[in-house]
Amino acid sequence: MNISTTRPTFSLSSGLRPVRMLLAALLILAIAIGWRAWQTMYNPSAMDIPKVVQPTAADLVTRFQQRLAANPDDEIAYAQLGLALLQQVREDGDASHYARAGEAFAESLQRDSQQIDALVGQGVLALALHDFAGALEWGTQAQAVNPWRAETVGILVDGNVELGRYAAAVAAAQQMVNLRPGLESYSRVSYMRELHGDVDGAIEAMQLAVDAGVPGTESRLWTQVQLGHLYFNRGDLETAQAVYLAALAQRSDYIHAQAGLARIQAARGEYDTAIA
Image 1 (cartoon, rainbow, N blue to C red):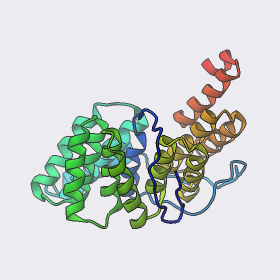
Image 2: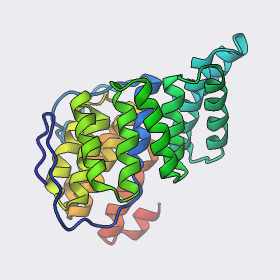
Image 3: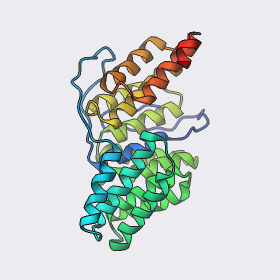
Image 4: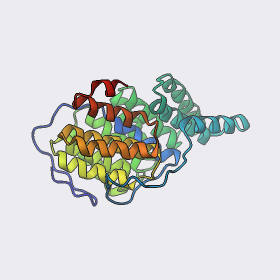
């Protein structure tokens, strides 16, 4: 699959492997909550990037709840609350936040049926709940409201991938990159390349995604871990370890990077260390 990393052009090839769950879908949340990204190429040995203190999803939930207490008809605050709750699922693994997020989006759309963050949030929620057809409906609605917003196209990429509509997914991914080359679009380029068996190309795109991110933000850390997984799956345990350690240098308790290191230790037969 030949993809340029500057507004890449996709071409379908044969031999697609089975689709795993597209966890990168929740990267959409980083944009809507206000965490921005993107610059140059990742260097796994660069461990001295200054740490950035970022609010957790729980912090944002509290912030928007307080805002709603002061103004119960704030449709924007409802949408942002829902997005923060979705992000919180990824941070603490508590799936009960999904229902609360859906309620927040519904409250927002009840007040403004075209509230774009709520429409995006509903699409992401549908993806998380494996309602891929529903996700496409929400993504289409969101795109109709704002065709220039890349996150809306990201929902279409993910929904089409999960439904096996690869040509539509590739076209949407190309559109997303054209709209805004960034963490969210390049991570999808990486995933599409991986689906086509182009692991080296997938690593290249995911490196761009990582290095464009703001150090210390959860979205960048998550993408870093995905990069580590790509190296791990290629059998390059040394580089995978360096990538996981780079993430942990930014947040020492980041569980996904810790899990990545445990996989490496298990692969090396260091079972006691991996379990610990």
